Length: 112
Image 1 (cartoon, rainbow, N blue to C red):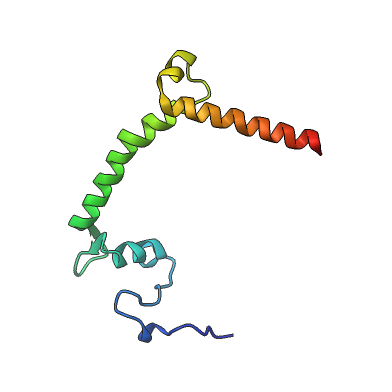
Image 2: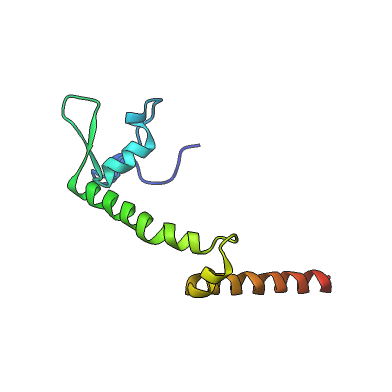
């Protein structure tokens, strides 16, 4: 049953049908990265490189992971010592949420 959506020729140059194949260079993930101009293909090869935009995105994610996610998720660890958890507003809020959810679930199970 053919699809009712627009054909590849009806769309713009960056919205072509995804290539099919077993190779990574023609797979959906590479196709998406190329479409979003994060990587570019080196002419005459099967190799790719980051664009300046792609490099900026990689740096953003690396910094976010190292400076925000890692310390933040560490503060949410159940094995975190209580003295540190009391000094961390994020850990305090997380533990309050955890206790409130436990109470809600316990009350709901008791009512059932």
